[in-house]
View 1 (cartoon, rainbow, N blue to C red):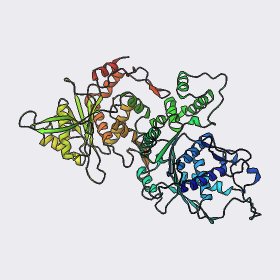
View 2: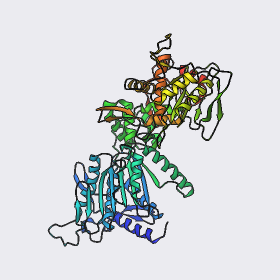
View 3: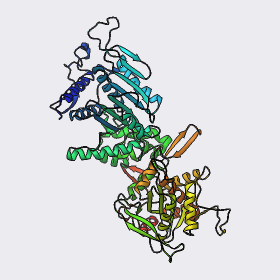
View 4: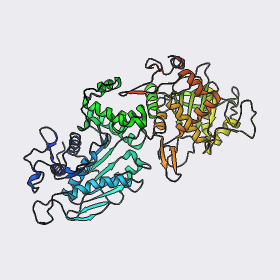
Length: 636
């Protein structure tokens, strides 16, 4: 524990705030506990508040009641005290189930500290106006219901300070000049007006625009000193977004802290399952019989029958509109049992979340073999006088290879060039697909010039048995395609609009155009392949990009659109979608997959394990062996 005077002073304020909330730090137990019935939350509090909080909260449908911290909220307060006792600013990131009460607990803690300390500023931010308003109402309602006798302003039991400002977005106290303001999280503007002591960021996973940049701007207004307190509390919205990256970084740092006592990240991660709420339980009827899935879930989650039956009822409520799989996915997102549950499912994801989770679990290769790839010039050999050089580069090779080319293998390369411009150049992306097994055997990403990218594509194509090349020809991609065809003279290239047997002419163009006509077809075809598990993927970066792809309402265009989050790349996604569509058109992949796979029965969740009926388990299958993979696919 830090022993500086500043830390002792801040801990004194914090424990006084706990008292106002009906709890205290217990030095013997080393945690925050409820006040006993003889203790007063404040020396001047009315007698009927003995052993209780001075704050009231709104409860549906009964109205107002005195706040009493739940077990999960006491754990949060304990974490705040522990962080402050270390003599560091308190940065806490909370991944949670819905309706556990953290928004209320955080709001009351910041309000209590604002009542006690002079000249503090607090910012409260949410993703939309309605949410920001609803959260700020928790602060204002608790203030307005503080003990106060309007007929006797001099009553010593009056605990509500006079206000200088009280409107929809601001509450400021007259005497100590502390204030709280409500914001909508917007990139470039959050928190820039003044320094802040406290911050409450709600549902960061839903923030519009570049959430990471918005958060960074807001954090710049908060001094990194003991006494500063920042909360992020949110449910998950899938992988790959700013919140997921922040959580992963904080979790890795916390794991290091548990081992060495040192953190590499400011944030302390706290996960709260739905089972952490003592209200999430219903006594099951005597006639209730658990399903096999529920028995397995109970064994893994270690929940009791009352909790399991509550889960059963919540899933049943959604089955009419979402079906069984959809209802379970919805429950896991809104009420996760583990952090992995929270990030595995996202209802607004473009690509089927359960299909993505299944493919990732079975096939993802976390540490692929990495290579550099070059095209060497030669006077003899292949057309164009060139040959490929593929060299190992374990640390940073941009080409990931999951399976080396078979002697008789047929391969396709699908590529999406990029404009290498600006402060944050986007990556050019390329996939190598096994035509016969409909499997990803290689992937490439690098912010490379479109002209040089043509060399990479041809080198990889030559290495993979003169692979069939399909490259997006939009904008800079046209230069890549023309260099492949005209300068490098590589002939095995896709021509858009060319029928089988038709000669190449001015009526057809090399490469694939992505436009308002072809893009919806790309998305629809790709969604089918993922939902029905017709393609095998190995690349972690591909999984991350696909899981961050979102279907969101575009108010300007008046329709839903499927696109990457702001600040995220989509080149791996688009390259894969182009490959799947062209492969399906040229090689009838979907029909071929149907023969191999038959019709997969719906997936049923078994705890955190997804199974597919008619699919054999593949733990024993070597992921890098297409022959074994094909054999598995053809089996019952």
